[in-house]
Length: 170
Image (cartoon, rainbow, N blue to C red; front, top):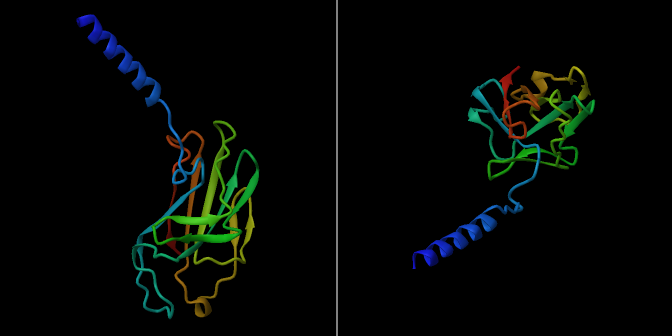
């Protein structure tokens, strides 16, 4: 009787090991997509602007940002949101099209990210070092001009995690 119990337990454990090692990626789990979060330690309530000022520490659904990156190993300038701007959806996720994926080229590889709020499609972007030039007239645009920048290295603990963009006022 004891041998039979041991054999059944061994068979059950083997079955669990075989079925427990399979993982299927569903549509809600993008494989390698470059994703963003965005916020600020303090978004100012600037009553001098005629537009809607940003307050608190978070953006609102529908807000749009411009995001650029320099990919070191590929010597490539990336503009996120060339089809649709990088936009905060109702679900709290920033989306853009076409989607870009991480393409690491070894341990010395890196991505330099730069983001600007508000979104504007008329920036002049240069690479290595990454810089963005644009015209801004505070008396005309009446926007909270903010920027964010961060470097992601291939040697970071989780190099494919969501890129945190922390904005500061300019």
